[in-house]
Figure 1: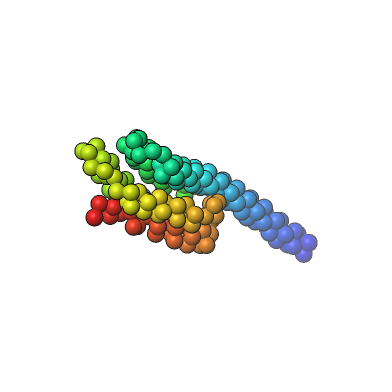
Figure 2 (figure 1 turned 135 degrees about the horizontal axis):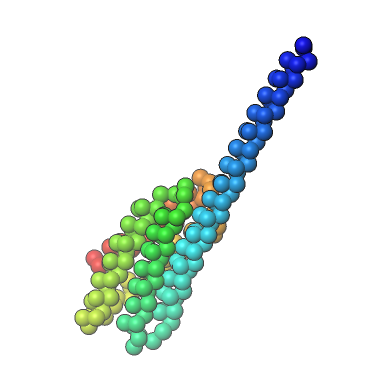
Length: 173
């Protein structure tokens, strides 16, 4: 009689342990998949920022006769960075708050668009503004974490890097 009682208790404990370990395993796999998805989208975003930085670097080396074309290349790169940020927000779960950075890039895009518009009207683009844009984007890129991490440290580094975009919100003043 005593053996049956212990057997039932042990059986219940074993079944509960199996259920708990299955739940933990499934949760672990979901978390790993989520981190992988976030990492892939984040890597695409960083690559797009790198392309913007490369475009800005190339424009400072080129002759000024293709200045309009250079400005359009930069403007297009800014739009693509904004698109990558939106993709990151829409597809990556548990990512640091991106709304502020997306908004900042949208404002930056509009501000740079006004510079392109002025260039079309025949006004020369201010090289000081172009240097400011190149410097701030370089700082942003350098401070971005190289790889995605699901941690407070990653969030803090990402937020600190995002602050480099703030000076670009008022290019036309």
